[in-house]
Amino acid sequence: MLLGGKKIIIFSVAAIGFLVAVYGSYLYLRSTAPQRQRRAELAAVEVREYQGQNLSSVNDFRENSIAGPQHVDRENYRLKIKGLPSGDKEMTYQEVLSLPTYKKIVTLNCVEGWSAKILWEGVLIKDLFGNEIFPSEDKVVIFRSVDGYSTSLPLDYVLNNNIIMAFKMNDIEIPPERGFPFQVVAESKYGYKWAKWINEIELSSDEGFKGFWEQRGFSDTADINDNSLAK
Ligand SMILES: Nc1nc2c(c(=O)[nH]1)N[C@H]1C(S)=C(S)[C@@H](COP(=O)(O)O)O[C@H]1N2
Ligand SMILES: [Mo]
Image 1: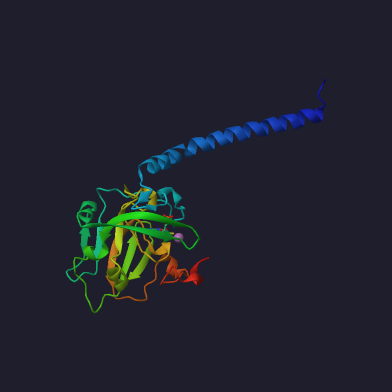
Image 2: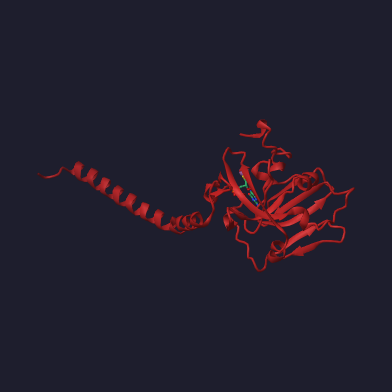
């Protein structure tokens, strides 16, 4: 049976569409292969259970950082600590890791409605200050990051809750996309207080300081138990 002109056109369009879809899928799968392989590698080595508690995966986080994932070079990295009585200081990655380390299971809650329960390991932020604070002046701790992000936490909150700056999550080094080298574990505060890729910590008297999301209308207290703050 001979095909009519219309049928040939419909058949050709369908065939071309099919080939484009197949080739597009192939290109997509090929371009995302390294990413999928990397997620599988991380999933294979992280812990998912600790002291009887089930943990989320490092792959459960949504990527919504203000400038996308950052890649920090371990050797050239310096953490600046500002506002100390003895003046500013800088620490290498290894110098930070030489401090006593602590583990905590803490859930990160993003205002967008997802959360991840993770085993964090890090150093106490107060140990970074080495007992050096101006008791009468210092009120806030300001965190700044390589992507231009900033946020702050009250100094009292940091000291009284033994807040840590983590270098490991679920027993693996914090991956670049999750904030390598360091992320604040700001327990009981929304995710936007959990600065990633930190390269500067400042002790400040500026109680009116507002970080990146705080300047854009998000609560400065960011208390996860305050339901009015969630979307
Ligand atoms: N430097 C930096 N830290 C950041 C952010 C960011 O954009 N830049 N996003 C914050 C937000 S909104 C959340 S919820 C947590 C976790 O974000 P993630 O899922 O992108 O890792 O990181 C926080 N820390
Ligand atoms: Mo967030």
